Image 1: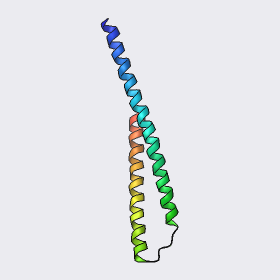
Image 2: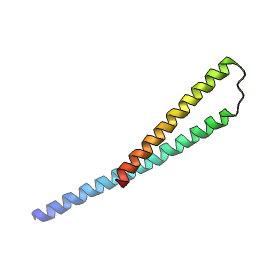
Image 3: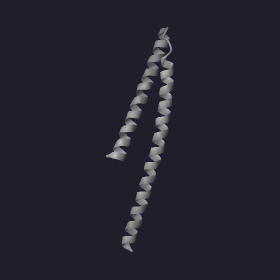
Image 4: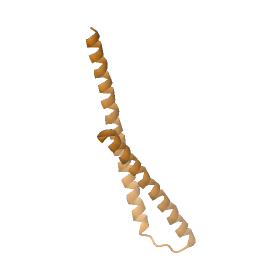
Length: 86
């Protein structure tokens, strides 16, 4: 009976862990999709000409957001690699 309980406990833990990993994978794909959409919008805006000082500061703000998004995707990818492959 004790062995059965241990096996059952192990199976529940395994199922819970797999559920968490699947949930993380879905969330990760969603965040990556959102990141790529934001990055595409920023790159589209990049094509605009800078004519005034206001345009320059606006563009600098956009570049800062782009850098933050790139840092976030790098962090997410690093976490994914550590979680699934190491």
